[in-house]
Length: 182
Image 1 (cartoon, rainbow, N blue to C red):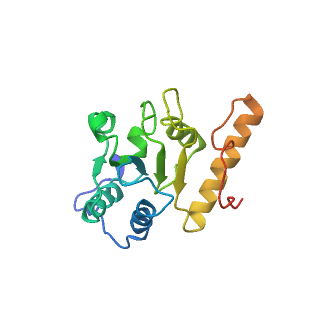
Image 2 (cartoon, rainbow, N blue to C red):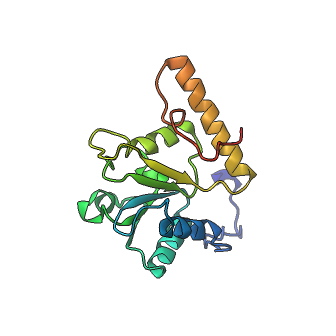
Image 3 (cartoon, rainbow, N blue to C red):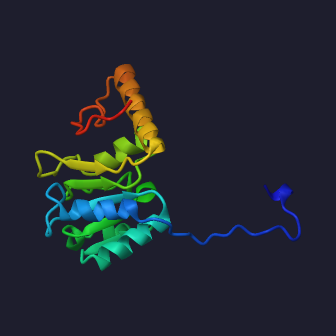
């Protein structure tokens, strides 16, 4: 990369362009609906891209929800028991592994993980010892062909891991409504 640099080379525009809020609108509808967490219940809203997290947090606040934005480096906020009843917009790459988040029983993936390993790890943040709920509720937004194919690839990979190693995979032992397209 450094060998390809030259004088006068154009800089990459790092300013995000917000085009359509349809995924954020779907989260707000879910939060207001019967299937979503109640007004006084907390939930995790997983995002992959930083700008989508910031935008989601802004629109949740504007819609009247108690929201906390937890990008990379916000370990104190996501682990703070005072935020357990809030809507936590969190970075999948930063908080999807290694955290004890069993005080949440609702999760929403605005952008589903790109690998079965990260999907298993992020599901495992809430599905662990100390979880009080008998059943966890996890939702996602599969809106176009890439989302469907990515989700199918994660399911296939989880099935392969389970069949070859014998390790139970949370993605396989889930109830789906509607069933995923594979």
